[in-house]
Length: 134
Ligand SMILES: [Zn+2]
Image (tube, rainbow, N blue to C red; front, side, top):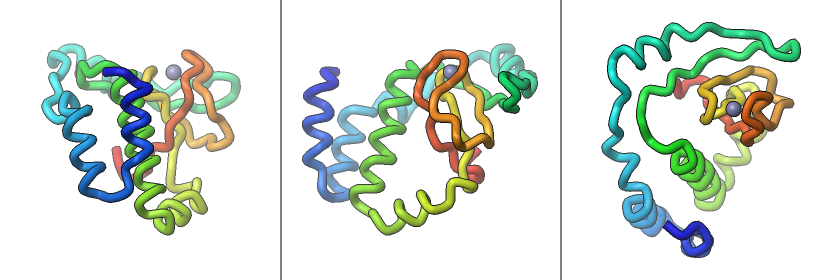
């Protein structure tokens, strides 16, 4: 998948139907997600919260084997298209940062400390994880 072409195509989407088609075409892989084996999943769920630089981080179990870059891109585009197609709802969400945790998809950790924008471990951008979405 060429990311420049993909983003160019993405920038032209103006309605739900074309987003649906786009998502189906480029992110089909996320529909049928291969799982880790049970031992690995068990290990994911046994990870403990920890404090780093005075901030509490909680584990977010990573139970599938999908490439993180694809998941990250999909997550970003999904939020961007939501803001584009439903700006009022997106503004409403943005006005309530307390409804989210900051989440590193790569490390599988999250924090309620909303001022943090990059992961202290891997330096990837943190995403907004809705509190009711786990
Ligand atoms: Zn990280």
